[in-house]
Structures are given as C-alpha cells and as structure tokens.
Image (cartoon, rainbow, N blue to C red; front, side, top):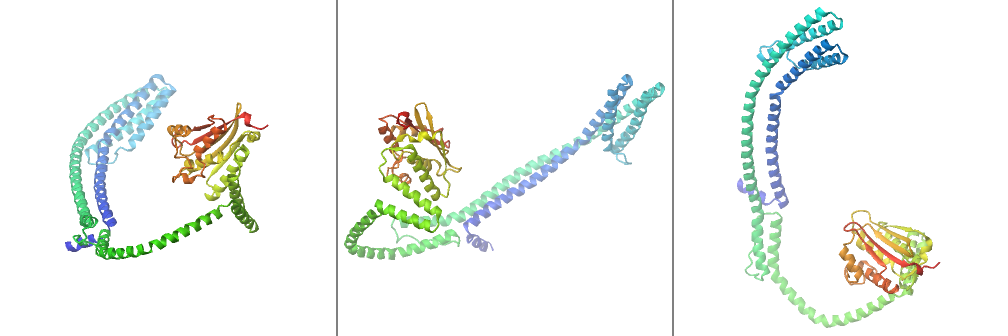
Length: 505
C-alpha cells in the first residue's frame, strides 16, 4: 500500500506537490490556531464573568449612597438642584435593581440578592414618602420616614458588603481554577507548536527529497555530457511522470541521438564548404541590388510623390484621418531635408505640432501635449532649424514613455526682460543633477540620438547634444540652454533663452 502511495505521489506534478506541502502546513497551522483561539476566547469570557458580580454590587452600593446623600441634601436645603439629584439617583438605582435576583431560591448568594432587592424596594418607598412629607412641610412624618429609611439603608449596605465578600471568595476559587487551565493551555500550545514544527520539517524533507533526488541524478549525467564524455554518460532513471520525469526522458533521448546528429552535422558542413564560393558571389550581386533599391527608395522626389499619391488616394476614399496623417508625415520629411539653417520660432512650433500628430497616430493619442504662448509676436524670433523637435522627442522617449501615470508635455513661450524664453517641460522620470551637468558640458553621450546605440534609435538622428552645440554656435558661444529637474519622478524642463535683438518687429 505504501509503495503504491509513493508511486502515485511521484507521478504528481511538482506544482501540485508544492501546493500540497504548503496547503498541509497552512491547514495544520490553521487548526492549531483555531483551537488556541477558541480556548483563549472561552477563558477570557470566563475571566470577565468572574468579577462582573462584584462590579455590579459596587455600582449598586455607590448608587445607594447617592440616593441617601441626595435625599439628606434636599431635607437640609430644600433646593431644586438637590431634588433633581435625588430623582436621578433613584432612577439609576432602580435600573441597577432590575438585574438583581428577586425570585425564591435555595442558593445562599441568590437569597441575599433577593433580600437586597426587597429591602431596596421598601427603602425607595420610604425615601419617596420622606421627600413628599418634606415638600408638604409635615415635619413629624418626614423625620419618621427619614429615620426608617436610614435604618434600612444601613441594612442594605451591610447585606451588599456581605454578599460582595462572599462572591469575592467564590470568585477567587474560580480564578485559581482558570489560572491553572490557562497554564495548561500554555503548555498545550508549546507542545502543539513543537509537534507542528516537527511535522512540517518532516513533510518538507520528504517532498523536497522526492523532487531533488531525480534532479541530482540528472545533473550528474548532464555534467558528463557537457564535458564531452558521451560514452560514460549514464541513462538517468525515471522516477515518475512529473515534470522532472518528462525532462529526464527527453534528456535520455537527446543523449542517445547526439552521435547520429554529430555525424549528420559533419556531412552537412562538408556540403556547405562546397557551396561557399558560389554563395559569396551571389551575395555580392544581391548586396549591390539592395543598395540601388534603397537609394531609389530614399530619393526625395520619389518619397514626396509617393506620399502625395497616398494622401490623394485617402482623400478620394474619404479617409480624413489617413489623409491628415500622410500630410503630416510629408510635411515633417520636407522640413527635415529642406534648407533650415535659420527659421522662425513659429516654424519650429508648427513642426512640433506635426510631430505630435504623427506620434498620437502611432501611440493612439497617448501623448498629451499643450502649448502656452504669452504673445504671438514672440514667435517671429529666429533660431537654427530642428531645435525644438529633438527636445520634445527626448521628453517623449526618455521622460514619459514608460511612466505608470499620465505623461504630459508642455511647450511655453514667454518674454523675460530682453529675452524670449522657450520652455519644454514634462512630468516624467526626471534627471539627476550630475547627468544635467555632464549634458550641458558636452561630456554626456547617452542621450545623443546620433550615437549608434539601442537608445539612440528612438530619436531622429539629431539628439540633445547636437541641439546644444548648434545653439552655442548660432549665439556665438553663449550657453542659451538650461535643464531643470527636481529629481527622480519629478519631471524635466529644458529652457532655451533667445536674445530679444533677434526678434523681428
């Protein structure tokens, strides 16, 4: 039977084995915790019930004292406040009497409660009569009622003290018994914890051994194969039909088929050598044809004619969005290859609008771009071409491309003193101050899109480094670029300052 169970366990998937292991341990922990929680909760309730009677009697005695003192205060002062205090104390005392035992019983403690209840009812009648006699100015009656109520008051106090002491002695015995039970529960919890740990460790060892033993054998055989000792590599024993067993069977088949594969590989290499010279000649002709084809593709006239034909076709088919997109792409390429050594700020912003439109088609409108222009006359200032678009492109690729929140880019144009300021800001990943310093000094090349790196392929071939260098040349060596970032995930702002003298009126 045990052998059959081991075989069934060996054929289980590893995920099921681990789930069974974790589930068994968690179930065991849950059972132990439920038992401990139930017993602790039971003991806590019993602890609370032990002295609840004493607390009630103390409250009853305090309330009785309030009734007596407020009645005496009224008899002495006959004030409205003392009368209100008496009625409040009487109501509170009556509420506490509701929980008292007043039925006939053989229990000594219950019988004392019944006597306190009966005397309290008589006492309250007398105090009420005393108050009424005082209010009616019947001196003889209220003095007589007061003396009777005071006598009963002393009897009730005596009974309450006696009952309180009797209950305290009984509760002390119950508390001792509960303390012993709690100590036993503590010992039981320690024993259960030790048993649980021992069982869990045994279960972990059993399951992990069942998983790791076949892996050790497979690892030993794999070392032999990797060392080239195919002849001495043993056939690994398959212990079950789980994932390790499947991998073991595949490994054994692989080891058996490697010699034949090596033979076929050798024959193939010999045939490949015979065709090598012919292939080299064919590749040379193919590369020449590909080069000519690419040259024809990037011919500007061919590109514009193709884009215009596509836009006309889109317009004829009433595909307005496709027509706008093709027109934007054509305008973007026309601006890139045209002579743009010096352009107006308005031209640059129009190019940025075109670029954002192209990106929003590509990324389904995920690029949130806004413009804030203080004065339209500021847009006539001159600057080198292809300045703003690479900065916006860097904000997209390196600022907001992979952020988890909604990425935003803002282009602002405003005047400061005798200068025109152009700001491109984003709410992206931000930039360290050390990186900003190296970029402005021209020593940092990672963000330069003209570098042949994987990151640079995101750009358009111009890059931030190229932008800064061209601005310095255009403005006679002045540093007109400022990069501002508060740190990680705080966004980045690039500010270009253009002298006011360069703006046309």
